[in-house]
Amino acid sequence: MIIHSPFTLHPSSLYMTSQAQTLTISCEFFPPRTEKGVLNLHETRKQLQVLQPTFFSVTYGAGGSTQEKTFETVVEIQQHSGFDAAPHLSCVGSTRENMLKLLQDYQAHDIKRIVALRGDKPSGLVGTLGEMRNANELVEFIRAETGSHFHIEVAAYPEFHPEAKCAEDDLNYLLKKVNAGANSAITQYFYNADAYFRFLDSCVARGIDIPIVPGIMPISNFEQLARFSDACGAEIPRWLRWRLKDLENDKAALQAYGVDVITLMCERLLAGGAPGLHFYTLNQAKLTLEIATRLGLMTSS
Image (cartoon, rainbow, N blue to C red):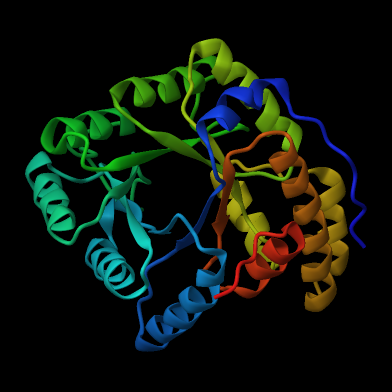
């Protein structure tokens, strides 16, 4: 059972609240690789449209390995859903020439949002990572070549990037992306609201004033979540990890418990001034919709 508690607006969130007249709700997909996956994603997207999302985003494989399928998925969403689609772009393994061609193709299909990332190095890659080595260089390139056409989202890490040498370096990288022309940021997922609010405090101190939307990962499978979290540096608090471990053989109980935990965290984030929520859906609608319903985010379809 959810215990509803009153929350006060977090001081460091005031600047974001003043910029966001309405909540930014977005949902992330990965490009399907099979015909069955395409049909599943089509149904998932139709179900999630009830949230009236600001946009749907589509991921980009390590080293651009899903570039073609990302493009196809983004164009399909843009043309047939009635909602904006935002492709992820990674500079790892890409040339400026190839990136410019891709940007032009997206412009031709009326895509107006980009999620600009450095991206993951593909397994086994030896040698250069590409002509642009960091996300701030990619943001600079997008701005130089396309002006203000794209709303550019970048990544932020409340618990800090796993490759960061220290917290100061990680914050400085975010500032570089903002100075290069980023409009807003989406965080890595987390399960500790205090980590997000403390991160905002640090951003305010650096003069980082773009909206920073919390990334939300519904809990559907403990083993999968633990693997993802270990790889990306997202912390599963000890109390939560142990409880999920206890429930891992009871899928329904685990998911119900996860919905309780995440809904309460989201209530606190929104009451504290977060400008919206970005759901990592894993191409499934059920848990995202349950959380959104409890939060009162549902609209009539």
